[in-house]
Image 1 (tube, one colour):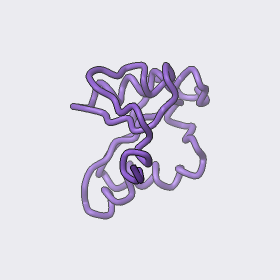
Image 2 (cartoon, helix red, strand yellow; image 1 turned 60 degrees about the vertical axis):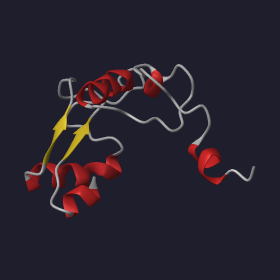
Image 3 (cartoon, one colour; image 1 turned 180 degrees about the horizontal axis):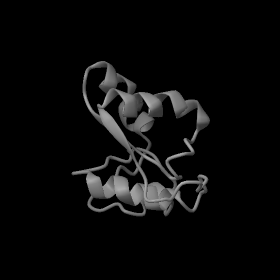
Image 4 (tube, one colour; image 1 turned 135 degrees about the horizontal axis):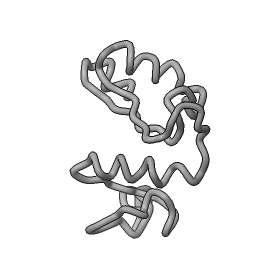
Length: 103
């Protein structure tokens, strides 16, 4: 996201919390920059005051999946948030293994 902003591009941050709670907190400056620059937006379906909770991340991932033409998941636990909305193909090995295998 930082590189997109630095290059004058646009970016969207999809949150698993209310707009008033940035998670992780280290991303507060980035969230402020996205909004104040006019180069992007923060998006959530949760009301103000909702804290990030592991049950919120599948909903966040659903939004990301719905907004995307495609999502490449390179590594994720089976049947967890990132893989719940997968369709088509996946990579059965970690990206490390695919790129740096010494076969």
